[in-house]
Image (cartoon, rainbow, N blue to C red; front, top):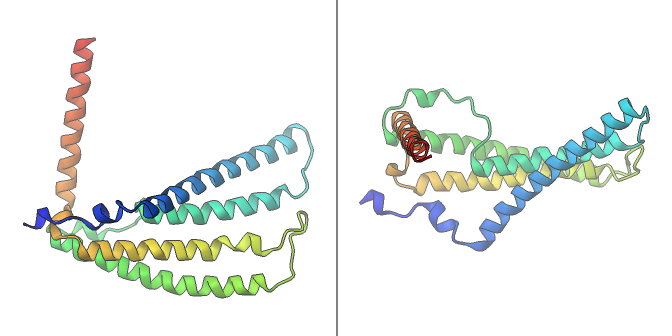
Length: 202
């Protein structure tokens, strides 16, 4: 009966605003990545090829890089694609252990993100009340810092989502390490068979 229950993500993904929010963060991450690469390319090209420094370009690079880091952090939190150094899951052999472990991880994540979000907002308030400006572009200094609270609250939002998802979803929705490896091997076997069939048809 457990397998017949709908997963939280299956229900949530039906709401268009939820999908739009995810697409927004994805597009923002790609846009700021392209802007960062372009900024670095222009700096290197002008400095080492044309021997010319575009005044203020370093400040622009700092701004787009900050947005890239924190938009990427939000996107990675939703996708659960951020770097992990978790070795405890090697000790688990049962699905309920994986479920409990996931809940534990996101309880810690939510606690830490609440703390960092609080500090991020306090820091941003100090920046927004300052008259400090960037040296070259003369833009308010808070433009460099606004990605910090936005990124923290975005990562907190998705950490809470994953915590709720792992609590509500049935134990059967979690796979052990061995089951994941077997599923990957099976998928590779199917792909290899399909590739062999295409080769023989050619």
